Length: 268
Ligand code: NAD
Image 1 (tube, rainbow, N blue to C red):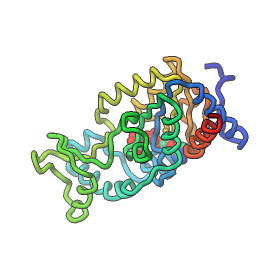
Image 2: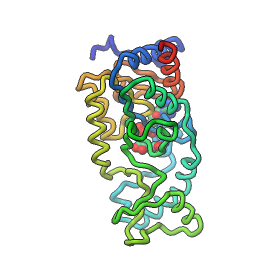
Image 3: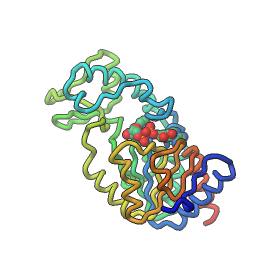
Image 4: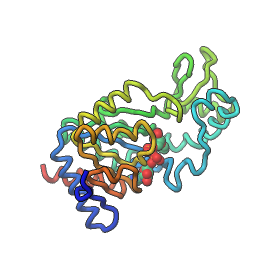
């Protein structure tokens, strides 16, 4: 897209509020809106993201799926860190960003939320289950990798706190793993297919709180752009897709999305 059309609002207050107004206008005009949300939409609920300077990867080394499967030492390390990683997700509440997207779904007929998040906060806020596509699974469930039997992660974590031993399935003795997608693990096929279809059918694609560096989710903006959709990026920091976007807002997800909804509701 021509540079002159690309607008990046990251400095003055007035350029940010102009950007929120442009975002509201674009959303008003759009018929099929797709959002891609990442860890950054939930930091205002108190959940750290992965890649910010205070993010989770600054504290932990990554254990990918093949290491989890092949090494009992890696599984022990994985579950030990879960005792620290899981508790913040337990009583977490949706924030202004999640709530704004619920309101967007009431104003516009077609809103789909594709989320990389594992926290369930879109549904907790009130976005209808069928409008949310979870690409990376859910932290509140734990599954047997052999027979698929499911547990509440909270129960597993409690039993680990009583006696630490990496858990195994009580039906088939298979390995248990939280129902989230690790690096190197296959994404749920249907969710992925539906995500690309939705992106390709959108006329406005808004990425919120994602570094857009984790694939295949990070390919969704290009799928949308290639199908003629407009691309908006709302993120605290720059992303590799900023230069291709029609509008970029470097600001808080909660502030930007609630500002957009306020303007849209006022114009009704
Ligand atoms: P990421 O950590 O790579 O990127 C998050 C981005 O959000 C960063 O670029 C950061 O600058 C931005 N950000 C942080 N706070 C923000 C705010 N208040 N407003 C606007 N932007 C903000 O996250 P990702 O792109 O989602 O990808 C990483 C993986 O992280 C995903 O697979 C996801 O499963 C996992 N994850 C999820 C959660 C969660 O469910 N809440 C938390 C941590 C990590």
